[in-house]
Each structure stands twice: as structure tokens, then as C-alpha cells.
Amino acid sequence: QVQLVESGGGLVQAGGSLRLSCAASGSRFSINAMGWYRQAPGKQRELVASITTAGSTNYADAVKGRFTISRDNAKNTVYLQMNSLKPEDTAAYYCNVIYWVTSTLKSNYWGQGTQVTVSS
Image (cartoon, rainbow, N blue to C red; front, side, top):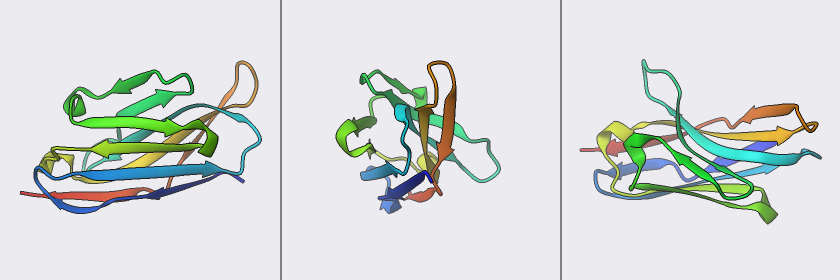
């Protein structure tokens, strides 16, 4: 059974930093990509950042230059370093992991979410 264990959320003042971690376990399949999404109250879940096994990254425009995604392939862990946080970054942050089930079939899993609150 796949488990995604997230940590690192919390309350921080505007301009501060937080680091999120997500460790994946329980699958015999290889990971294709890992990423972070967020969902604020009343809004749709949106991509924050993603990273492939090869290290290719993708960021939402709103976080470019402030957030950095990285991963430790040996530990199946993805990190999100968030700097210069703004009140509009306040949301529940969800880890996402995509596994290769076959050469053409992928399987998608979500973490339970960790709350990030940025006070002004």
C-alpha cells in the first residue's frame, strides 16, 4: 500500500521560510514524477511545483524565484523550500507522486495535506 508522509507545514510571518517534505513508500513501481499542489479555501487545487526523476522541474508562475523543489531519489522523498512567503501562499499543500505501472500506464497518489499559513 502506497504511503505519502508529509511534514513541515506551519504558521510563519510574511517574508519567512518553510520547508515541506514528503516521503513515499510501499510501491514496487518506479516513480515518474513528484510534486506539490496547494488548495486555498474556496479555490481549486493548483500545481505549485513538480520534478521528474531526471530532475526536470516545473513551477507555477506565482512561486517562481521563491520556491525550490528538489528530490532524493534514493529516499523517494521530495522537498519544497519556500522562501519569501506571502499571505497569498496560505493553503493546504498536498504531495503528489506518479508511478510507472507499465511503460504507458501511470498511477497517481496524494498525501493527506499539510497546512501552511502565512500571516501579514
